[in-house]
Image (cartoon, rainbow, N blue to C red):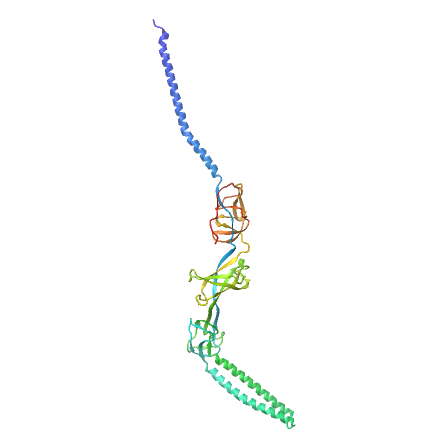
Length: 400
């Protein structure tokens, strides 16, 4: 008879083996699950940590700063110019008549005293002849009256005539002399009128207009009636250039200041001159000071009436600092700049702008030489905000 314990031993051994196998399988499964969890979660944890670090870094904006530079000590003003001849005169007739001939036309260069035209005035010629005849008659009458007065004065000394008659003869002599003087003056006047039949150039210049032709009726004078100018003459060897300077520069625009005239028909070329005078008063409408610049024009290259621009280099008594225009903030408080202090904090400063150089602007007040000014600041930037400085720039523009 067999032992029952011997029969159960293999079964117990098998059961223990099965339990160990199941335990090993369970451990393997757990290990696989843990490994899978580690492999899947760890990169996410690393990505999350990196994201948190990146977010923290982005929370402090990075900015680029620049240092203020000294503004230039001079300013170049470019202003429109009114170009005129040094002298421009209309020439009118001084006697009535008809134009007999003219000798110059527009564009002709003439000398002072050169004959320009001749006027036929027969009435003046006839009046002069009559006046000269009257003078001859008056001279004869005056001579007789003078001789008579002298004789009566001699007879008075011999008591041959009365004082009354002698005084009458002396008075008649004086009246005849006065009449002669009057007639001689009339001859002189008519002689001048006759001389006006020839029209001469008053100075060296260019004829810019001729308004009459042969046979035209000429009326004396420059105003009233149908009178009109015969010629127009301009002296162009010197140009008077008038410029209106803004009020802010009126105190530094002094006589003797050099000036350059530029014209569109002469690209790259300028004509030199200088300020010679100014009005001494600000125009109440335009708030400008009118100055006159004299430009030599011996060759007549520049034509009066042309459009041009005058370049003036003016000193700046108190130049400020210069900043790039992209550093400015326009706030209700005024024009501001954002600066960074040594602790990396933003400080907003209200500035007083000055001259505009295009890509740069002058700062007169509110800024120190060692301030680190932020370039391209965000519109939302506020004072006390933390920033990270990337580097120092020389700015985004250059001085003119």
